[in-house]
Length: 205
Image 1 (cartoon, one colour):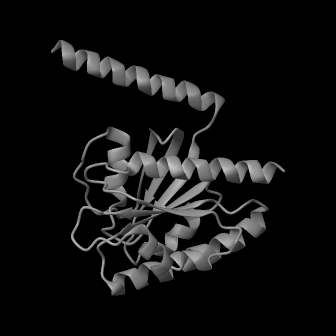
Image 2 (tube, helix red, strand yellow; image 1 turned 120 degrees about the vertical axis):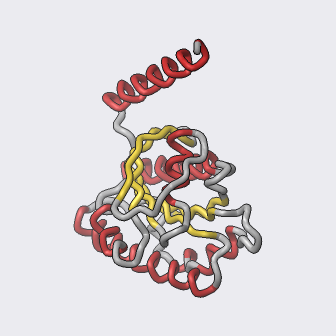
């Protein structure tokens, strides 16, 4: 009973600390996109709660405040079903960072589908950033489900998704992870946080 009480108090204190910090420094806005069943919601809930949460397919969106990788984030997880993907443009408008989640064990057909969607998103970002006169948000490809047989390495996924072909003004990185166990998630967010900091510093010059 006492342990549960202390855990509850600690959680409440952490929440209040986050809210106070947000008053001084607003959280970094990041959007999770990717094909359906890539593990976006599982990754979000793992980051938020620190343990596995059985997630149902996202029809619209989920949003959570999380601390990970040295950053304070406001994370939007947008559904990846084909009928929902046109909405990505609205959710990613003026965001600080993008996370494109991919199932590393997917076959060639799904990888090609992911590549097409990622390239389309990149073109939309180009137009939006010109209109808003702001730098392109950093892109992190989260190579999820690394625990599954046949999971591809980050280098292979980068080439398959056409990341080297993105504009030079587009900061990007690929990070391996397993959202179910949480392995690699904090390191992935740390990589994204460094990209965000570099982008902000470059824009100030």
